[in-house]
Image 1 (cartoon, rainbow, N blue to C red):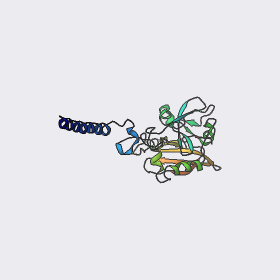
Image 2 (image 1 turned 30 degrees about the vertical axis):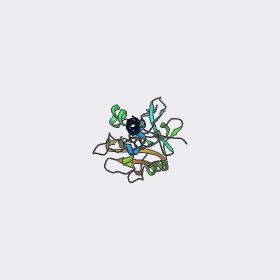
Image 3 (image 1 turned 90 degrees about the horizontal axis):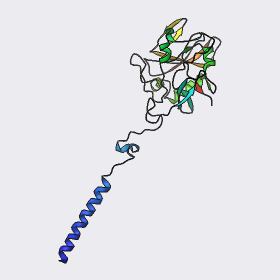
Image 4 (image 1 turned 60 degrees about the vertical axis):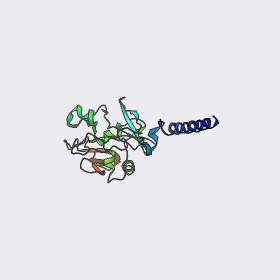
Length: 229
């Protein structure tokens, strides 16, 4: 009797140990997204496009009360949309081809003097140096265009990665009364100016980089405001 009981006890002990082992190894990991080795999908802030996976948008209002998304990139906080504020009392901010649908999609185009007063309190038109800081953060001028361009809205296979949520859109420009390049090129004013021209940041569909050049102040281009430090 004692021998049978002893054998029974041994078998029961083995079965209990196996059950405990199975229980410990087969449970669900409820925090699964945080471990890169278990197929999780979480990613660090700023590593995913278009506001997903860690990008957190803020918001600001223009002088007319319209709300826009904003995004912090490095130590700078930018508008994440092109400005579409109709500055009162002038005709130097326009929709591309005078079509309001283009303002809705790409924002308004401003001559330089109007661009200088278009940003709301607490925000300003970026200097050329501030544009360079953004480009350098996005990998340098040779690849920053791809990182900053929106994932759609560009023609000729020119869509970008939108790595940081900046979502640059190609609003085109007007040069001496001739609207050009909507869908293919975006030009954004800077506050850095010369007697008859000012610096602009330019991105187009056909290259990966950005270009900082200058254009006549009388022409109209897009505006992104950057937050005051």
